[in-house]
Image (cartoon, rainbow, N blue to C red; front, side, top):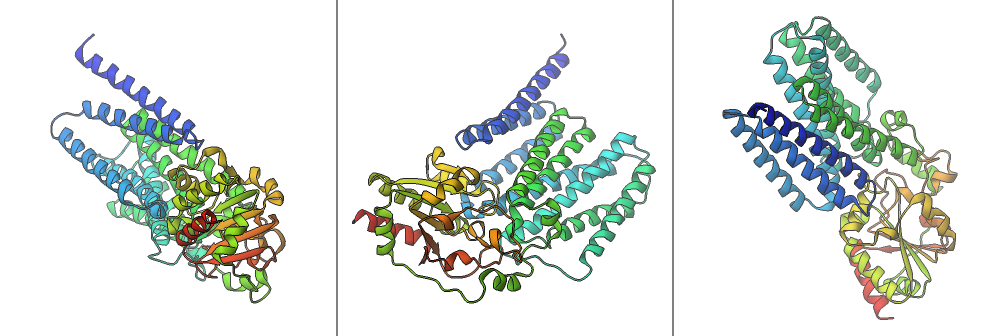
Length: 467
């Protein structure tokens, strides 16, 4: 066997190994107990794929790719170490946008480095990859700006918005058909208009989507990027890119569907419903007027917790903002030392990205069996002595069950209002990310403990210890 044949065989074996590791990584990521292993397996698969591809490159191209790998790896490593968990959703959005932009860039380079007419498969791949990549990049940028609160998280709408979006989309379709039908033999201005239009559509696509739906949007844009990468694999003739992109696209699509079901809302409603745009009017409908709330002291709540049989912790974005996950674990340890059973109720869309609460609590070494999904935990609330809600506003809102005028009506929620006692930790009475008031706070079994979540939990831990 010649040296060239051996090199090709080694490359194919490396590709197959990487593909298997990617698939195993996804399988293990499906459970919190094995998620870290899944992440490591996928990372090893990516390293093998990069090294294998690098081995086929010669001359100047070798150094360019090696430098890109080092710079990209350093950016990823520094980001992972420095970015706080509260900012993880926007980092995911930004990195996802970078993936879409990479697919756009490759397609553009491939087009301008060739000569029309292009083969049918190639021109279709170039056009689709560029459009989807640009759309994902533009949408991810807006998702990042909303999550980072550089711009308002509320839906941004204007009169005739759907018409504008439709016109831009039709323009993109027309330019795509023209480019494909002529096998790429179109003026450069047409290609530029196609790419700019797709990017603008991505921006317009995310603008009217409210912050409460951002986990679904991130998941959907992630699937877009995966599809764009898979199509790029056809352009370059690399099976590994096709498989990796398909895995990302398929998993992102499935996650989007599951999250839509968790909110009992069709994807069309998420994308075109402008959820939260009329928050002001819905507030009155949800609460029936000014709220009558009860405020509790740290000592009162500590006594309630210390002498409870079981406590259900309900984490939300407020816990993430305060970085209170380690304090929550310390409180749970203190309660468990007194014989109190402590579990955690996790809503599928709590936080600002899929699995946000699971990641935070795993970071604090909370036992995986204690993390209960919504369907498993809801039957336990009627026998729960204390439900400790930490910043989870929208996913505990009983208006979803009984207020037809509420925009979240019909959305499955955590039934914390059915617990014997509900303690809500909040900084203030401001509404949650969805911009909707929560009538839970007016119920007779609910009390508010105001203050920074971490400081409040630390004070509760000290007070429980003193009992």
